[in-house]
Image 1: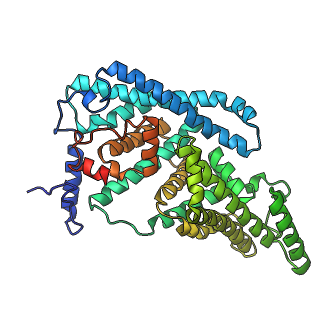
Image 2: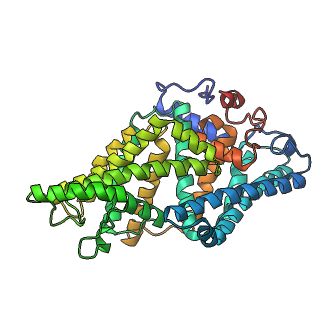
Image 3: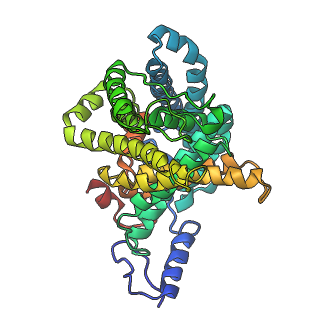
Length: 452
């Protein structure tokens, strides 16, 4: 008898490899063949409205308002961090807010419309037409609306979400064991790749990631340094503390800086400056991410301030990581190992401080892994080792979104909690109100798992 692939009776890890392969094949087959459902779409997707067109128009109005709120906060925050006024920031970001809001609204509306159209054409539901194919159609139609530079950011983010969903599926079905400490190793390796490419400028990193790493490490890339002395202290408090410390070090140490170092301060002063800078930026980044994930609600920021231990652990990680990178770089610059290899070694060793980040830390590690993979992919194309895949960003975003939305609808307990909150906010709680007893396709206890 063929092995069962049922989450209520998961396949044990002691099973043979052939049994696990058969289990995967049966799971994939269930997405294209019966069970099917002869239910109307208003019993599943839009229970509040009987007609599909009325439900679609209501969904369009709701998503458009939510999208404007989300992207206004997303684009306004970087302007405020660059010391610009609210009016000036809104004036500069208004076209971007409209374009990105149109993308997100179009994606939601087309996904909902494709769900109803497929139901009417096929006359029944299959596992792959409940969420995966509608989400893929919505991605193909809506992503070209967005600016190309932001298309890459969206594709990388959704790829990290899809990888996390696939990993959780495999662990849930006992196909692979959970990897303890895997996120630390993944982040350390990704950090080595990103730090290497950021310092040596062999491949152009995304502007946002490049700006963030420049702010955190308090030092631009090597190729952009003018006469080797460009790092400056930006905050007045740090300038006072680090300035006095630097004067003390210069007067008491015969060799304060290596000839290979590109910073203005002594090495120890630069390490202290970068560590303090990391602590400050770690706190700011947490507040910004919490504000964006909640759709601009300040209540979530105040909740984060109440969680002092979580806030301190993440901030201490950013401070330790940034200080470790520049410290190891300065140490390696005094040896024969310095040069282009020093940033990679410093990023690898300092990445081990990721263990300070509280759970769940896997999403952050996966995002940095996708960023590192993107850099390697561009480097291979640049060196003409491989050819560029046509429409690679569009394909990556489409496949990743289909996997993620299918997981969120059919197996919501495997979805990242922050993304579940985002979907609930964007759909005005429609995502939470889905009757998952009717989506009993891949697993038989979806509703039970969702409640737990």
